[in-house]
Amino acid sequence: MMSRTTQAATLSLAAAMFGVAPSAAQEAGSRQTRDFVQAAAQSDQFETLAADSVLAGSRDTEVRSFAQEMIRDHGGTTGTLKAAAAKAGIEQPAPGIAGDQAMFLAALQSARGGELDKVYARQQVLAHRAALAVMLVYSRSGDDPTLRKVAASEVKLIESHERTAERIAARLGSP
Amino acid sequence: MQDTTRRQALKAATIGTAAAMASPAVAQSQGGSARGGKQNPRTKYPVPPFKEQSQPWPGLASRMDPRPDHGETSYRGSGRLEGRKALITGGDSGMGRAAAIAFAREGADVAINYLSEEEPDAREVVDLIRQAGRKAVPIPGDLRTAAFCQQLVAQAVSGLGGLDIVVCNAARQQSIPSILDVSDEEFDRTMKTNIYAPFWIIRAALPHLEPGSAIIGTTSEQAYNPDPDLYVYAQTKAATMNYVKSLAKQLGSKGIRVNGVAPGPIWTPLQISGGAGPAKVVTFGATSALGRPGQPAELAGIFVRLAEDDGSYTTGNVYGAGGGQGQP
Image (tube, rainbow over all chains, first blue to last red; front, top):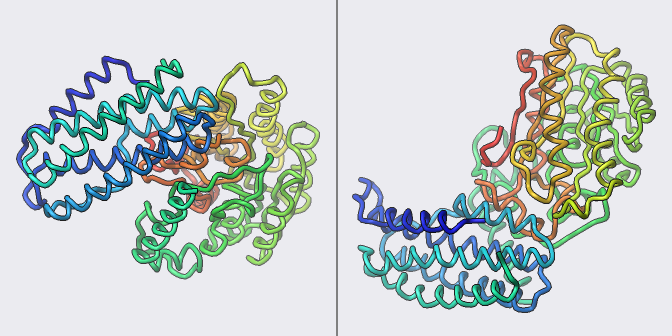
């Protein structure tokens, strides 16, 4: 599980990563924009995989309905993101999840019963905080107007997911 | 259910993409025509999410969805193990089956051991070995006693007319999230199958092994980076990784090589019969850098390499197929 210190480090790392950087010669879009598209796509994919896993093992009504909401909402944001990337002339994001997300998913895969619900809720709080940081930074300082709009529109959605995840985590007594 | 519909749609889309992107690839994995060339390892085989499924231990490959690929239609031999005589435990399905098919097509006669519940899978393997023009010696039985392990080696030696490749591959794996739920019986069963049986088998086989023989143990990425629910299984794989190294030093003087194979998450019956929990099965392999589980067929060439005479300087080593998880 990610400690608060690690979490702070992750957020500042995310902020550093999405600062303005010169773009590589042949690739369309700035590095900032390409990194944003990749991070947003990975976050969507992680949400879908985590929801798939939790739905296979959870009997908690609220957890299940949250997971189904994640599949629906993050399927939607992926579509929006890909369309915006195409419109902005940015290469489509590569499939897959990030290393820290793979560790989260592995922990989730190994959990069972009530523990599965608790781990999921805790991860969802953290994952949405990380995603929110990515969206906030790009929505404020992103250099592509189309993708900046996407980031801005996701902020509210992710904030709402995070609030729900926090409520579920509190109810379940997630560590 | 909406969720099921989405999965099916996703699966259909994936298959469509894979087919569109790499039709020769599909031909190779299903029709056995193309060799060489290159395919995208991400899309070469099925990707998660998978259907929720479980079978009673030890599970059958023939009832898995999707069915694992053991190289049935794709593996083509070129005489790399001509005239060799191999015993493979757990040879009915999974990596043992992939090794059995490859060994036979490389020219080896093959004895396979399996549990009696696995007879339907084993029968398919026997047919495949015979179709390759080699002798198949099926030896069902539970490895948890020294007496059976001795008998297994004796039957393999008499059935094959000798022995020069021993693959200790059979394993027990159960996902149990808390040590508080691990019974003495479960712990003992795993230790007997995964640690005692290779000891009994190798000890019994050694007098029959001439210089040039090879011993191969199946270890795992779990040996280095264990999942919390695989506390029992993972430590047996660490033991396997270790005995490979001590025995390589011990048997070097006899001209016998000992090596290990370390798979990452591989789509085998062991996983869907209690080896992985439901939350792991549906997203199995998504944690790897390639985004999917490995198929047993993707390890066949490693077993062949470690057994063949061309690999004569490789001993005390562990070869992996880990999907990018960073462990040897």
